[in-house]
Image (cartoon, rainbow, N blue to C red; front, side):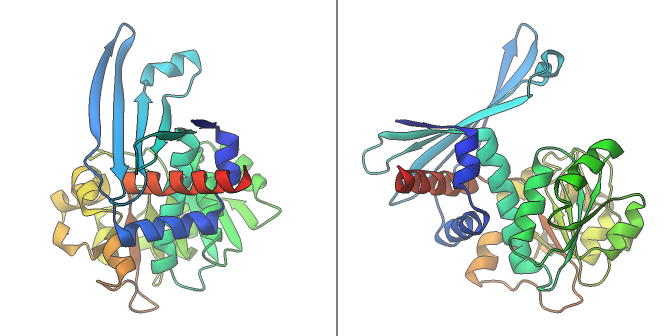
Length: 313
């Protein structure tokens, strides 16, 4: 069995190939049971183990294990750590143990880029990113791989971190730190949010006709990054219905406080990619993509890592 570290994962997962690989997986479908949550009672506090299995009916088998230790912050360690175990579907033999953190952030950004490829205006050139964590640079790179992004603006609660991220990409884009969020969002073609906010950061009234709103960060019912107006004004799409029903705080809270209903969701990614349901219909449509993650995406990314790894071996 091969051990594939984070640096190798980053090198092996080229954006166009990863986006295509995830698209193919949504079209073909995989078996993906609900993820398992296991509470672990530790001496220094509560921790959680997450298990996310998925397998092809005629192909690879995989499972991601993620350990969530909030108490790690006191020791200066990441709160989340994980690995991905990819196995041969023909005989069940393990093939590779892959760094789960790098795999996750790249497949998450690739899923957003996939949705933008299908939903964002073809000429989208201005990107506003909310958040300065490890996922933020991935979203910049991924969106730029599917749309002609020329301007990137970064918003963060810590202006210094926003400035650092903007400067990281100053040689590739016209970059700036957001000082007026309403103004920047109002001019953006794509707005990509990767925060842990529990209050709306993006107001639906700010969105210009033709904008695409990408909501990544809120992965619990108590979290949200956009208000109910955004859901009401936009054509809403999700990665999977099952995940959105259980965890998409942006949608669940909009349902509680407005006339938005889950029936208003236009499609999940599989339906969109198979052509079962339409995506953007007019240039002035506002589109919204809400993702909470899917084990299908992890499996697709792990297969891409493995096949690129074996080609280079």
